[in-house]
Length: 159
Image (tube, rainbow, N blue to C red):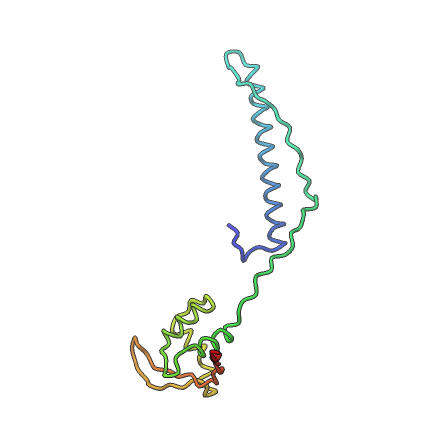
């Protein structure tokens, strides 16, 4: 069975060649079957079923196949940009990795576990843009704080 990752022009050409070979084998078996039925029809006491012979159109092997434009996957959002947005959306008093993971899932559709989030958080920790407020072992985990400058939110004055 061919998976999506196995698709290439060469693989499709090999598949096409196998299919053409299978089609030729089916035609040969059909011809043998028709020949045996004709022989059996001449034997007295053996009733042969009537056979309708349908000529199959030949399959041109080198016929040009209409080509589709190559599949271009939609652009993926950069995990660093989504991570920065998620960090800025975290409460200033601190957050845990599970909360950041939930925010990433909501913002970019990334389903990530704590280990992946911690790995992605590494560069911000090294640069000092995220700090560990409280170290904890276990399911709850450590408490982190984002020190990135937060955008100013201006509330329009009522007139």
